[in-house]
Image 1 (cartoon, each protein chain N blue to C red):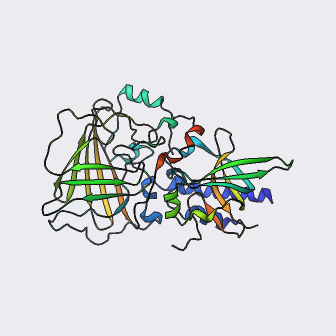
Image 2 (cartoon, rainbow over the protein chains, first blue to last red):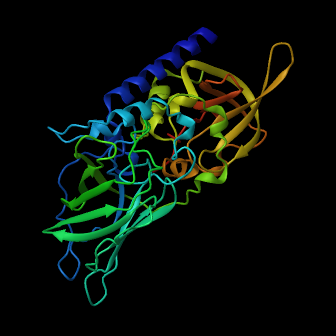
Image 3 (tube, rainbow over the protein chains, first blue to last red):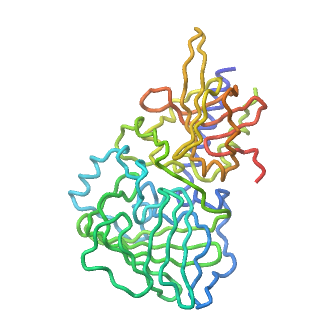
Length: 259
Length: 132
């Protein structure tokens, strides 16, 4: 009986391994976790002022939480400077900021949904907020009022973000990041010179493409662009207070590695 | 024998968010999927908390000794999205559970499959029986 159970257990693990190996992480972040096919839906909605409406609960769109290089656009190359490559080999999984319930930074995704909030009144939106369920419960603030970046912004986890419309694409330009977050589980690193340009396009009611240009001459030989896809999800943001009972870290002592 | 191949695979395939991406840390850095655990036990405590829910199980060995195991689940928000309810596991419940032991060799494991006294089964992240 016990051997039979062990055999069944092994089959189950094998099935999971096959599933995981065959399914890209981004694809696993399907609608409501139910793997709806990515077929075109109704046209993307618009606000009364004509700008695209990004309302909805979105899942995915991060640029591969495991290894950002797996999200490179075709023809793009991620080439680290020698010091950065060496630095990555010293990182430990238990020191991953995400494992420590710190913000994921930009553009790292997390396996939790997020919501984009525009703030139109009698005029177009002056701000767009991205509200994250995790990791952690937090938000990004994107200024849409035409201001520039400050000359010398204090480094922060989410940086200083200004947005504009390029047709139906929201273009978000961000600087002023700290150097503390990792791009992925492997620990792809960056410096305070990091400059990110994100392009959000709601291609139809249910889908959004997100392209992210990463330029950090302090850690990478040249800029590179990664891409992800977000899908509309049913439901609402739920509470997720990561640091409530984070007892995992005492059991982790391993090199930074894939999930 | 309540565990069937079909139930096992169905239970594991229901969520499309894989085990390895359902955590705020690298799963492989904490757990060894090549070191499975399986036992019958009695739940002593349930911690329905972030970033992972945990339940604790007293497991009796053949020599009468009792070990308490810490079994990890996904986060409550993920569990709820995948059909769980907080009271599906209760202190005093006698269960059968499988999982992957922590790399550090402590009595800690990531849950793979829980079989309840009524035969219903739950996984790390999903309640396959939920009406969704």
